[in-house]
Length: 361
Image 1: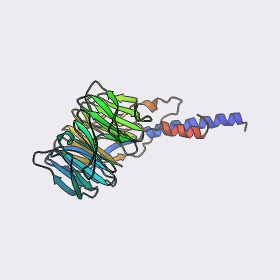
Image 2: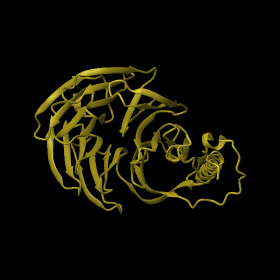
Image 3: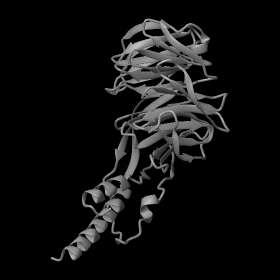
């Protein structure tokens, strides 16, 4: 066959294949199936999963909880009376909790309490991020402390309620009152960058080269190819007190606790809203591990769901050269029963990769 016509036939076949793939992927649906729930004496202020799927929960009842994958309580340890447990973090085989009694509670992954570390004062007792050799504790100041209590550095930030994120050698802290994102050097705490917003800034999350930032009404996604100078990729509005955010482990989705709207929202990495679930109470916290999502409600209840990607539905769509379906936003609200929601899958990167391999793009 003439090479010119052979290449033309191959290109047409590839386009037909890629469009078919995109249409099939769009037909998939995501839903949530509840696995277990728990009612404590206070709202779950923060949630996080360990590497093996155990769940750490900090609560306004001043207690730290650790559960196994099946919802069995492994440990419950409380701080002083009327001192809330403000935040929880996980890294490197350890859960870290921070309490208003000015102590960090460090647990092994199996729920065994390892030690309590004095953080010094109320300047550091609201937020925590566990690191390999210690942890960062924040409130009006952020400080890096080793597990023996020795302080490596501390710096004034403003007011940080949620544990900052770490990427490469930098720390990203949300300063609520200052309406800014502070970028600190991990080695010495030096402030190297500050990004200002026109509304309160609540939480940050990093995954691969991505940084997500939640504010009062927006979710932002940044590229961290240059960690000191994040490049904004997109922002999504319509939120109302986006108090907590988290990435899926594969970095393809961002879950948001949309507090005042009483909803869990999930965006894909392009900024498309792909799932929205409503609740009778405010959504305070969210965590993600493999195919599981944990959601903390302002009713002192938190729930753990399994994410279900339904079977690819049978579609009889005519193939055309239009790629409109790739940019269609597929989302709708769901009620307490958790109806299925169409998901726009990320077919474009796969298509581009295949095209390059075939030397067509």
